[in-house]
Length: 117
Image (cartoon, rainbow, N blue to C red; front, side, top):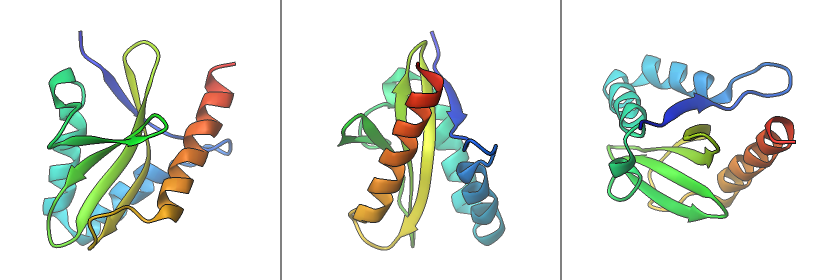
């Protein structure tokens, strides 16, 4: 049984992940293609571990693509075999900045409050 991948949406209907992917597609089509392929792989449980994915704690995981700039998509599991991608970043470092982790956690909690009463 496959998982489904969906993107976090704000209360106002905005989609930060779609915005991130649109910018990535414009600036680096190769990395965009790799990230989209990685998101598609997440539908299969065998890719929910390293090297493609890595747990970050508190229910968050990261999808990783290494290049000149490391591209990461932060996500979490939901009921009914769903994955929700909440935040995307690009950076040169190996670690994820604390402000990006805070953003992802905030979006995860927002989503859970609105979608799982």
